[in-house]
Image 1 (spheres, rainbow, N blue to C red):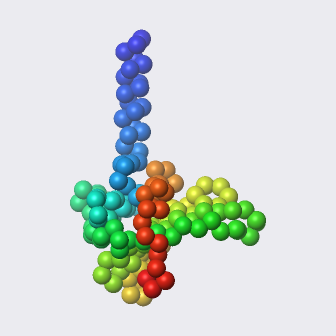
Image 2 (tube, rainbow, N blue to C red):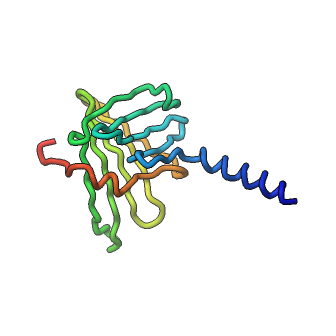
Image 3 (cartoon, one colour):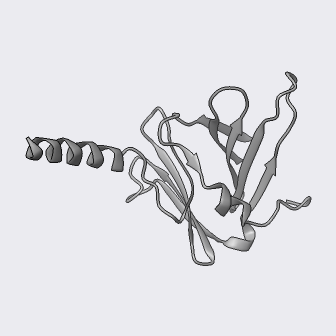
Length: 148
């Protein structure tokens, strides 16, 4: 009977370990309905952005110095007199800009990736399960300057 419990525990733990790949260096992670995912990680003095179905072989990957990746944190008062929370991570790669955000209002938070290039803006909403922002790491980034 003890072996059964150990096997069931091992299966449960292995399944949860792969549900959302969390690392101490991950600032933002989410998976989209089409199977693609985005991960923003800090590696020393660099921030790495990876996007695609396989993060081992991403469709798009780039790095920026940490001091060129910015954050916005606010706690707005919504129309219903409830306090919300908005966390944004801003990155650029050439002419393209990316905003990874978590917006919390009443109910569950919403995780969104905005990608803008020239006149095109893509807004991709993340699946709820496994999406997260590492708030402490994000708040360690510089504030978004007015001239960005």
